[in-house]
Length: 180
Image (tube, rainbow, N blue to C red):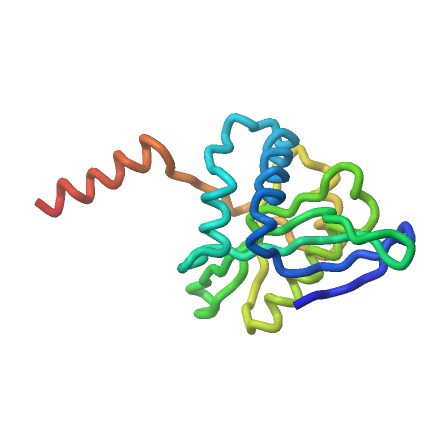
């Protein structure tokens, strides 16, 4: 599926589904995003793992690629979004989680991020899902301002939690010790 929109700076933006051959490009952008988010050491995956997650026999996520170009210029990759299905017990229906949306500096302010988000919202609605959710760093004011501008609600009363690494293994070990 592809979605199209005309961006603010007379650049055309088109959105397409990510393809297997995009895995290396997306992974490179993931590394750039981690650098921007001041956490480059947190990237532990590889482009091969990403390829398997997006295009393997049991995909766990999906991806979109934004491209800019048009009549007078060739289409060039300009950003990506990776997302996956969630579930709301309150709605008793699925939703969508936007894991990452990234536009390299050169493509910002050309409507690329908005086009990616609009296409993802379109996919969410078309599938009959009830919500599209994501997290943003509290210091990323350009992103936060944009999300407010489009009507997203910041859920300040909810705190995101994570178990990983040794803490995850320790909690899992407790389950194993109880089973014996």
